[in-house]
Image: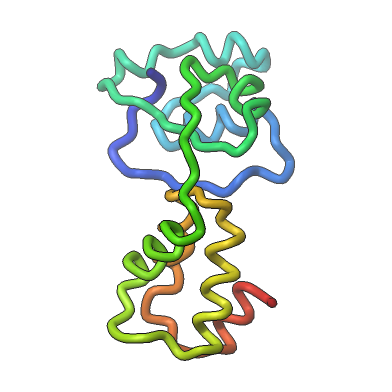
Length: 144
């Protein structure tokens, strides 16, 4: 149980990860002000988001260490999809009617491989390419 959100927020991993930065981003989305507190643990305990309207924050990570560092209350290991299942999910999410052009299909399969069988990653990647028919744009997103 973590934080209340009215909108789904999708975020890529932070390159310069810091708990303070993560807490500030979450607080900003929840319209909370944590600027007066410098200590990470005190910042985390300063507000009970469940009192603000309920809800949960689900954080996905490939690293258990990340979950430990940010103090997740519950960790669930999600099984990854096989390459066949990953490809089927990618194509379904892409929503392309008919066969993909051969060159785009090769790039799309590489994209699918890079998602390492993680359903959320596959869905996000495919959705971001939905409606893109230009092979150059596909190459730009995933150089082979």
